[in-house]
Length: 424
Image 1: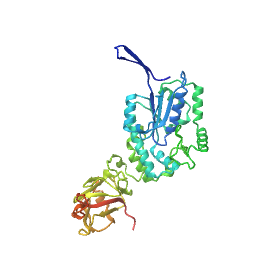
Image 2: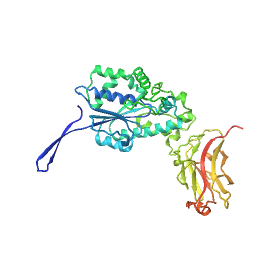
Image 3: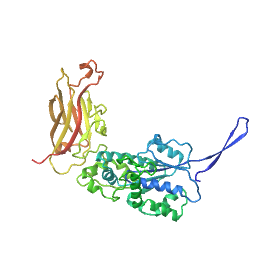
Image 4: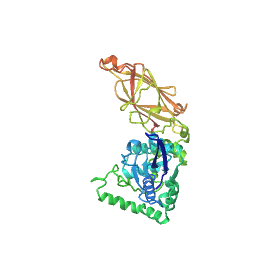
């Protein structure tokens, strides 16, 4: 049995020494980026621990958990807790630092990770990106909190039998070559496909299997096996979305040696920008979107589909990077909603870009504006600053006695986009 036995000596009620033997439960964390082979690793680790040389009747519990709230209730502590995780919560990361249990991490080119989620499970690009970005941040924090065995998908660790011995050494156990071979064979692509088919036939995934269903022990999902190929993102993800993945996973890429370049049409200077913006990408400012970094002055917290400006002046700041030689004209699109009431039928608004006045108008309802922007104005300074001046800001409580909102609000912003102007 792994772990260690410790003698705890305390003074009993009569002053005599009491010896208590305790066996340490060893937690093993198999963390990984989505679609990086973490489920293969999870099952390999469990199989190796159960079959390690010199053990008998190893008590092992394996499960998925991103936080301590996901842990099952255990009547008795096993010898090993083998946990699979993607978006590992800070409390779990702290637990592994304290317990000093083995930590193993699988990683993959984040573009292929996103593409795999889309093709295998039918996820939207935005959802797949959100999951990969979140998991990537957790992998970076895990790696920095302790020594980890890093397994790169591109090295095809799941296709090399020597990986079994590499994992066993990391776990501090011995495994015979014959047993290692058996475990490796049980995790081959063909064997896993047969296992998933058997689970489906047994009804483990329910009558209508979906990506959310899984086998609670092995954590194999329906359609779990993708193409397994690297570079599939080229056929699945647009160049703009490829750039979006790279910019949003910079910390992960730097930590794990993925030195990715932006597609040629995007400025490499965006790597260094805090508020990098990809030309032509709509920015949505509702609560569901991670766009608060662009709101630099005079805004409330995003809520619903809008963010409301406060007082009489507000700013949006974004980095567009080095502009190409052409075109000479760009288009700034803003979708705005003015705060209006009977006594306040419209809102005056002035819109500036890098100090240049683009529009003065009155808005009475939801409006999508398209404003022509010369290249010289957009490139005049970086980051670019869009300033909204709205002198008719008012308190809703002044117009609706039952409304307790006493903020000075005027303009709600739904969306923003800057893109090259269409040819005439």
